[in-house]
Amino acid sequence: MNIKEIEYENRLVAFIDILGFKDIVKQSEKDSSKIQLLYSALDFLKSWETSENWDLTLVEIEESAQYQKIENFDIRGKTNCTAFSDSIVISVQVDNNINEMATTLIVNLAFIGAILLEKGILFRGGLTIGNIVHKENRTVFGQALIDAYCLETNNARFPRIILSDKLLESLNYPITDEQFVYPYHQYIKRFEDGCVGFHQMTYYPVIQSWIEMSNEKLKSSFDKIRKVIVSGLDTSFERPEVFLKYKWLMEQYNKLCIVEDYDMITQTEENIKIKIRDLNEGYRGSHIHYSFLDDILEKNRNKK
Image (cartoon, rainbow, N blue to C red; front, side, top):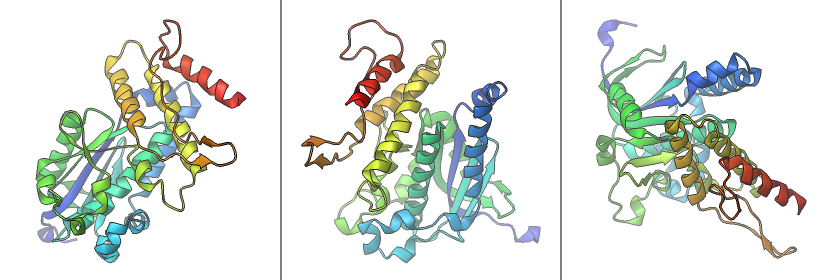
């Protein structure tokens, strides 16, 4: 490649970091299952360095994407991804189609986050737009990368990806008419602290009606996620910063709106997402472990 031909491009840029990576590495010295966890997670992230993996599977199911012409959402061949250690950088070339490009990127990032969370991996990130050099040989630098990194480090705080003011100003807000709705509008929200973005569980309420997503699959996913969060809440009694991340995640989990199916035979609602109870909620005692009550409730459910 001729160095003289290298120029900045205007791209969507995401910087994502795995939370607690150092702790997991340290634990892996004594626990071989942590080695498997790390390898599985990093290998999964590495697979996204292939541009073709950023496909339209999860975009095509959205009616709003059909209105906007699905082919306009294709970011394959326009996406570069560099995975290194506990971080991943993704950038997507944009022209006058930022809403479509942002949709496919956000939808796939939400999917990645969901898969990692089911494995027990929390991530945090920043998403912006700006100048960057990002090549297929994984060379990457530019102000947009710095901005995305700073968003992740200084602003995200919790297991979520937040969007920059610059990007939000470029997207289709406010939504003045239904014809200007894009699939990403279902994924991102404004959080209590004012930031706008999405967390690792946003994927599930959006795709719950997808024909490929059965209640059994959803229930299995939520059972895994619940156990990850409950375990994380009891990880340490000396590190409030870790507890607060899992506590925040617990609150977001409990807020998720999932449509429960009604079983005509048993005349009961199917519990797809089991609530994570707070300490001693509905139970006598002064227990300090979230897992204590969750284990009791799970045993009672299994008896039924």
